[in-house]
Each structure stands twice: as C-alpha cells, then as structure tokens.
Length: 115
Ligand SMILES: [Zn+2]
Ligand SMILES: [Zn+2]
Ligand SMILES: [Zn+2]
Image (cartoon, rainbow, N blue to C red; front, side):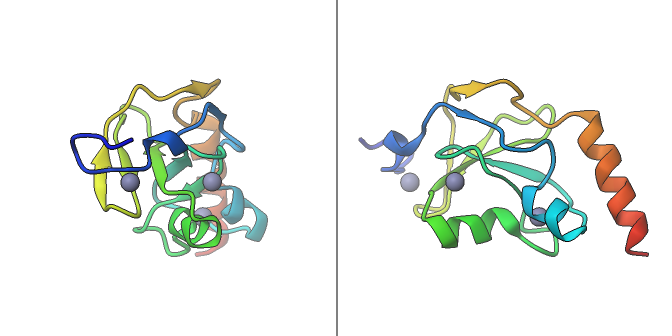
C-alpha cells in the first residue's frame, strides 16, 4: 500500500490507545520533554527530537515502528521515519488523541526538578 505522498507503511497504522499521558520513557527516568508523539503501530508515547532524550526516534530505532502522530493538542499531522514524509490519515485512535493538561503539569514538575 502506497500513499500518494510516497509512504509505503500505511498498513502499519493500527488502532492504538496511548500508553501514557506524557512521555513514557521520560517519566521512568524522571526527565522532561518538549513535545509528544504517538506511535501508530503500538501506542507508545515518546518525546520529539527537540527534546533532549528524543524518545520517539529512539522507539523507532528499537522497534522499527515507522509512523508517529503528533500527540500535541491542535495537531493532527503524522510522520513516517522510514520515508521521511508527512502522513495525513484518519487516525484510528481509541481514547486520548492528544495529551491532557495533566501531562503538562507532570512535565513542569519534572522540568523544575532538573533546574
Ligand atoms: Zn512510510
Ligand atoms: Zn522522552
Ligand atoms: Zn511503537
């Protein structure tokens, strides 16, 4: 299956449910993030490449899950790590499509711990 934008991984988009409200791996190590991304193959929530830990990209390297969707309020774009193109789909997400204010509050708490 190939989209007209050149991504050949659309069949790896699954119906997912976000694993955490916040970056799963940052919360584990007590660190903070900039923006959040949702893995559309398994529901892993990771932080973006402007975050120091880059957990969304790390998750791709670990698992080869190719497609993420922004988990930021008001953002609906996706990205394929393999083809390096934007992916625009009707995302099959159960539950939260973006993170909540609770995630922002947790992130602020983690941030101030690191100053
Ligand atoms: Zn692709
Ligand atoms: Zn992270
Ligand atoms: Zn994944």
